[in-house]
Length: 387
Ligand SMILES: C[S@@+](CC[C@H](N)C(=O)[O-])C[C@H]1O[C@@H](n2cnc3c(N)ncnc32)[C@H](O)[C@@H]1O
Image 1 (cartoon, rainbow, N blue to C red):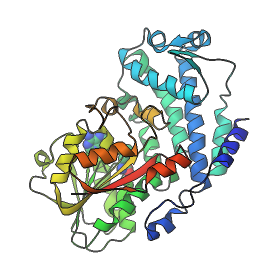
Image 2 (tube, rainbow, N blue to C red):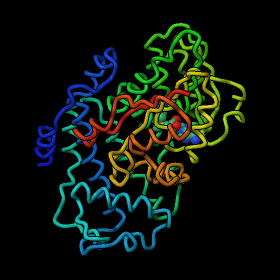
Image 3 (cartoon, rainbow, N blue to C red):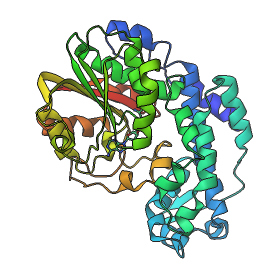
Image 4 (spheres, rainbow, N blue to C red):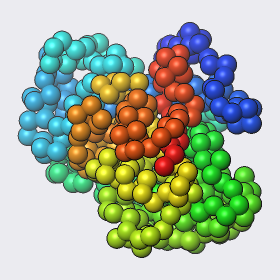
């Protein structure tokens, strides 16, 4: 039944004919944003919602949800940190039609179809070998209950030994869902990849973006400085990247976007390109970090951000499910108008933040809003901004 629903949803979408990239990247993008990509998003959305409901039942919420319950009654007796993720789960399940919402009360009616296997096999048919994110949702459900019951940290539960290999499976260019993030950031960064250019990558993680840059074979870069806050990622990158991203003049160093760059070995250094993919939304004081990055760009230098994007701040998107449990995601400084909520932002918020930090020529790659209007699940984009 759910299979039919998803196929119907797919048929009713209008599919963007053009993304609006430069002609070279537009031609290359046509491979990326086709049916398997769209179907995977649709499947992931309903899969994540069903995992959220399964988790709610694991937490013993069914009795209360059957008669209708508020967030406050559901988190009674759980650790106080449960409230934000629980609020998100309820809103997401209601949005996906699994709960009925009346004012502040949520009710579970009937018996929702929780057949995750059927969804998984549909994903295998539509996009064989691209189910890394479904594996992550299953693992999330298995590992996260002590976050609610005992106050354990989400970071420890979700980035521990069991899940680390799954994250590495996810953050790869071979995973078409993730590849889109890197591809759009590459499209935004390409003008900065000229001979003599110094590039700084923030939160480089598993190194998939550096690999994509290396595959472009940019000639004569002076430096590709790969950084991350996590020593495990940095060590792994140092070990593997020279072989799997050949040709880039790598240097490696630890870098936390929450600390001034000049305190981290970059005093007086400037770059022609600074790029961060899915990292800047965790910057605690985003305007300060953006201003600091601008100060480390050479004249005319280019900041590129690849980000997961939301159509509206109050619309939950399935990718948030993991990150709701991370304190680094939730505990950030809010700024009225510029950053009114934690987590992923709308394209308009990013443009406003970059302009506010003094960047000029802020460009969306591609222009995201028209794509979102056609397909609400379009949740990836990049921004290029000149110093
Ligand atoms: C979503 S991953 C992006 C991974 C990477 N772009 C890739 O393709 O594999 C986010 C990365 O940001 C890093 N990160 C998280 N907080 C950070 C911080 N405060 N400063 C710098 N990097 C951070 C994480 O360690 C992780 O590697």
